Image (tube, rainbow, N blue to C red; front, top):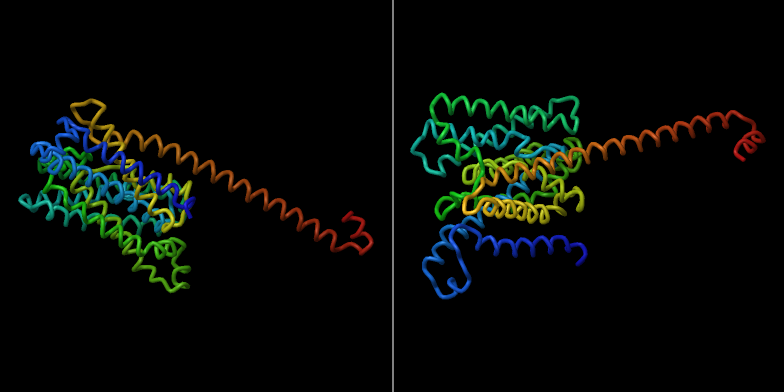
Length: 358
């Protein structure tokens, strides 16, 4: 039992240690003695800036990782994620539409548009890939990236046309520098959505095996597919509204965890959530200390690390696939050879059969 949860325990301990450390990383110096003495300025920094930022980081890491895990299972492809499935691009378009037609809308008003457009964009992507006859492991995410680029092009065109580029730039590049008390609480929506994903984890596994398999087991395929994609879209939209675009988290984290823990969602959800939060937290700490006292956008750090890891995973998956195909071909050749020999022996007399065997 202890061996089974060893990786989960290690990730939880590392996350706890780095979470405490991140509270003391920043432009303004904080120390434990001043907090213990009741320094109002130090307590204000902690409650208004540092703690909300930490909570937003943890929710972002957990949410985007779980969203990627669900999308990969439902689309039956390890390279599908909110980044390669046009979910993030659709949420950005929704925010721009809210800024154009409801310029005085609150953060929650923009979030509603982001939710709607993210759900719609994700569903269009899934509807499209379901009609692709040849679902290569690389073809599906490439289609999603092209679809996302089309949506991104529309967003950029509208932003330039209506002179909204400056206003939209906050949501195009992910960063936690503007996360303050009163401006980040939307990410708390991720908590009930992740709980809902845990409840339906086994259903997502079954739906990922195909429509016919789901119907044979009595699982409502269309409803579970809609539920999973809606959870994914709402998690992504809530992150984009508060933090902005952060790529690769939903792509690389589930893949890394699945290498060590397998592909069953319920067995990997805890490790995926913890590792996702840990990955985002490490990237955020790096972004704060590289050019201190200035700060880099976390999208830059995640993009660099994520690109390197993504290329490595792509090469690993393709190499693993070639080896698997080669093994299958060798087995087929051996089986066909044995079948041919058996047919030749069956036509011989019993004495010749015995001599040919020996």
